[in-house]
Length: 227
Image 1 (cartoon, rainbow, N blue to C red):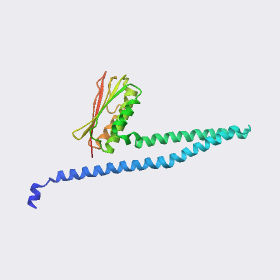
Image 2 (cartoon, rainbow, N blue to C red):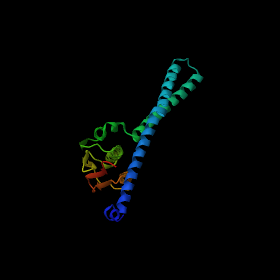
Image 3 (cartoon, helix red, strand yellow):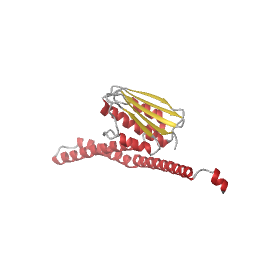
């Protein structure tokens, strides 16, 4: 007992390890729940709405070939409205599904971020050095951070160019987004950076914002590769 007390880990270190394990299990469970919701929405609700939209489309075609009358005209208006509503709902559900788990992440973080950068409305350069693939929950956080930061560049910075860099080194994933805009980015200015900081900190990550007036802006996110 004396040897264990003197040579074993301190009670504080043991508690920290238990908390880290609990956090990792909670994060993995949350990711599994999100994937299950994604599958249910994709295979259930979205599929039924697609079928509804197709049925309404066929009904619309039949009405177009029917004889003109006031009753048929009212029915045509109702079917047109229902058809548009069904298609809009399908589009919203697809956006929700992508938000839960972007399909691009199935091919890895590098491919997902390269695709995201290529779709940027302003010219954006992408660099990656990922010798090791991060944990799925880390990939998801990094992807959502990049999405938000690139959206901020487009909406608020007035930049003409941007760059996204992601690297894995010494157990850390480093994500850096740069732009040549007007600067002034800060937490609490309505740019969503506060929410990003809170999300990153739940996984013992950090976010650093360097954005002097007149620019450029460099925002760095660091996350553990694994939890």
